[in-house]
Image 1 (cartoon, rainbow, N blue to C red):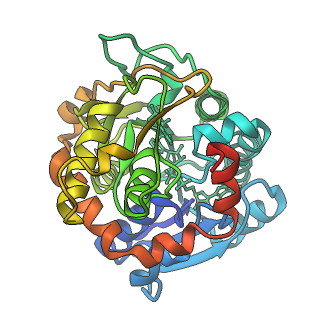
Image 2: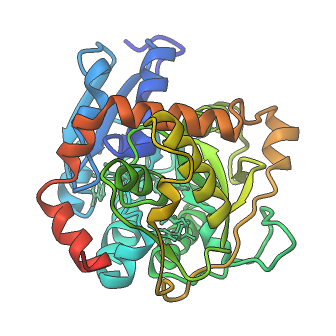
Length: 354
Ligand code: NAD
Ligand code: TYD
């Protein structure tokens, strides 16, 4: 029999970047919860990310693809998940430009399979149930030099990635309105930190600096992003999951905007220091390349709702977070080597041509 505080949580995408930090956080903090990590282990999923907790008694891993409706329903029936925290997704904008359909399949159809299975399992018996959908600020489109995304900003996605995430958000909300399915959505800004696959800006550039490879800056490098340390995102998800109001959206951000080129210059300086290279050495690798098609100019989150209503704010400032991140990648070059062999090399060649 379950104790009063116990929950059986299906966490999808737990072998990826943010998911692995969230799994670790929940498994350690809530020994009385059962955390079931469901992940297809695509190129972005890696069980090495979870080595330290894989033997924990409250943790189970299941390799399954969320696009497989039958298997997903069977798992819901077998485990009777009372909560879902859904992170599994195709997550890289550049890949969505070359293969948009893969994004529609996983991000839209995969999300719908989870919603359907949850609805079929509980048949309106919604007490103490929750479907928590993890989304991105990219659904709001692009800002000019001023302004912020709030929870009421109209959706205006520009990339196949953000269009697929926007669509999945709409389906979650529609299942709430139509079937009464209890849900929460959070939309977060750019994350960075350990275990991020080196196709995204920060780990890609750290890896290239280590290898003395060019740093491909899209366009003029003036695009702006709001950066949040990944562990702070995991803590925000914990807060929203336990204290957020059903049917609501929460924006999560770092209060931390950087133009790409300013961020890259800071990263280069820190890397020179860590690698004992002469000042200015890494900056010589900067190479301006053709802009990303449909490149959103600026994302900036107004995170005052989660701050004021739930008392969450980032705990790590950017300089500290970036230094921790660099230290982790330098210490874990084996991890980097493992994930940058095979399929990665083909991706890199196709995306950057060298
Ligand atoms: P990631 O690419 O590192 O990890 C995605 C995980 O999902 C991987 O483990 C992968 O194996 C798994 N997956 C992919 N397709 C699957 C499928 N069909 N079935 C089952 N598993 C599948 O992504 P991330 O950066 O950790 O992002 C996690 C979530 O957070 C995504 O939903 C993303 O949209 C959202 N998000 C990310 C950021 C960011 O900056 N990285 C910011 C805001 C929101
Ligand atoms: P990315 O990490 O792909 O995240 P997102 O596109 O989801 O914000 O990119 C962050 C910013 O860095 C974005 O403005 C694109 C830019 N960028 C480059 O200039 N060069 C690169 O090689 C990559 C991957 C990104």
